[in-house]
Length: 517
Image 1 (cartoon, rainbow, N blue to C red):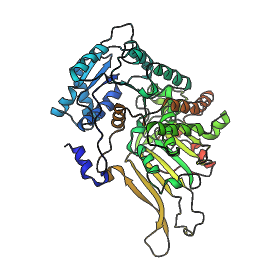
Image 2: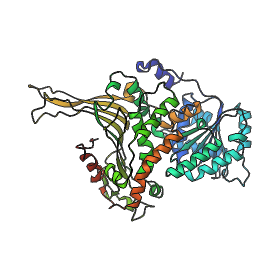
Image 3: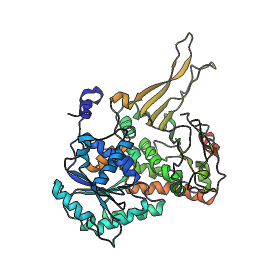
Image 4: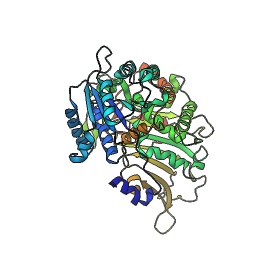
């Protein structure tokens, strides 16, 4: 019995949980295996799954990239990556047993003119390890390579109609899923020529975080919250994803993206849907994803540039100070144009036109070079209709707020007012906190661990469906197009501040303010 299993059995808060059976023998084929994503995220996730006996005995990781390496060099590099990014040095029998499942092929797989060794090598590995043709293809490459790899999988008989009938075939596509509505549709058409929708897993790492998954359990598993989860009791919702960091050497990428493409279209809209969706009839992937699509259908569209001006605000950071250290402005970052019009901050007011949420605004903001790194969902309830207390200037009667902290320190807090321990009737706000790690006695698995395992099991609940992606792009395109056509006076917020004045005005027009984090 390993440490992970022991923690499940000894912690009373995990009573009733069980470890799911390992998946069947399979080959995980990582395209772009020499890249940053594989080193920083995928290898540590796979190693942790293996240590918890959640990978099958007969699994193989086959790396494919243009970088010249052999199997042994690949294993050594992955050992270095797990030690560096996994937070602990790895060596000895545990690592050796894991690494013997690694193989590497050096080639440009998307080049259909050249001969490929991938199919032949996979067939050999299947025979050696008893793998019945099960394949997980992971696109850990730049998005520009996606279509070429997908076409090559079909032409080389590894997926699609030419693929052998035995075993399952699945593909993980990393975001961004296109850079606008048209490119997202084009990518989806290419993917669905080779794979069925059930085989496609569009990964959004936010959906792998434990507290994000807990939103559904919190709402639909507790009888005291769902009855008040509506316009009658909730005043508004704020969803924040703040980062201290700048673009961290990714200036060239960020110039093409901006925060709307990078965060709002995917992560932030996913969080909004989890908060706003109706209860599914059954808890399965299609039922949950159907309800999330319904939320996007109900979003009030932005039909004109005037709508965008009223419902969205943008910003770009200038020089300033973060954590006591001076930092340059976005336009001074490597790879960034000195006259850049790319937004590094965006705030959007969403309205959902349905019975549950009519007239309840959802304020969403995300930005770089803000004072701290924090992602949270804050539900602010309506104030008590008649205030019996708090008539003294020393008293503060604040609205109740339910905050779901996604990062860091995953947890949930509820703010309410209580009598202070002093003579006389004086009140002040207090917080009741739940911290995930403290309550359950274990660190939650990383998002990539969760998502990789769910994909291997064939459960798409935590992945974006094609229709959802298309509708999310359709909503944000008026914002992107309006801002592209009308240059802004950038920079308009100092690094280390909470964003531009325009974002404050977005709430001030409604008589509200951003929550202090």
